[in-house]
Figure 1 (cartoon, rainbow, N blue to C red):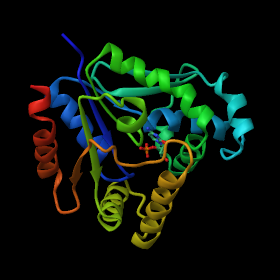
Figure 2 (spheres, helix red, strand yellow):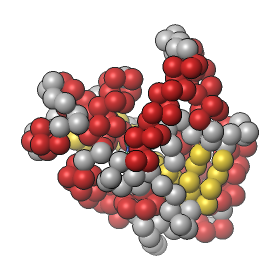
Figure 3 (tube, helix red, strand yellow):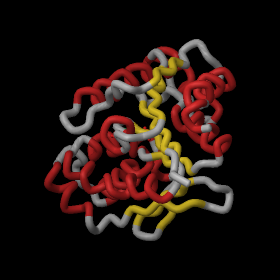
Length: 224
Ligand code: DC
């Protein structure tokens, strides 16, 4: 049977990873979080004390950084950097900045492309990122552009930070989100944009369950 690919793109904080993971579970597909791949490379660049915006320096670090994606018994994706599990470290806010920096370089994107396409060749996947429907899997069976207003995303992020015991002021979180949106949509290499044939799911006014229902409706018939 042919493998199915569902591509989910959208800005940070739209709930992509939580929803994509839930969707993958429902469909019995593999969930691939491609942001985690850029984060792992960002983590290496940070550890080596390099500037993520320095393309030549980052390119020199690509080969020595062995980035691997593995799945635990719980079916969850974990990231390994030169054999070390860095799944927690890559979530540090500081690493987000490094991930965003390294992801802007065309050479980095080209280098990581095969890893992502390979997974979709081998398995049925729900893959989330910024350029999945436009660059990585242009022939995906279903493409979703998952979005929400910057304010709604900032409020959700604040709640998450509060729960984690590391609260941050709403205006600061909002300005970081606006900055990241700008960086992700204005970079020259594979900027975040909606694929022409993507279905837009706006979760601004939806809770988790409503968003998942909207997603399932969007992928429904194509993947039966
Ligand atoms: O989704 P995330 O916040 O974990 O992604 C981390 C960074 O990686 C983010 O700044 C955008 C970038 N990214 C990308 O350029 N392409 C992808 N397919 C996924 C993430």
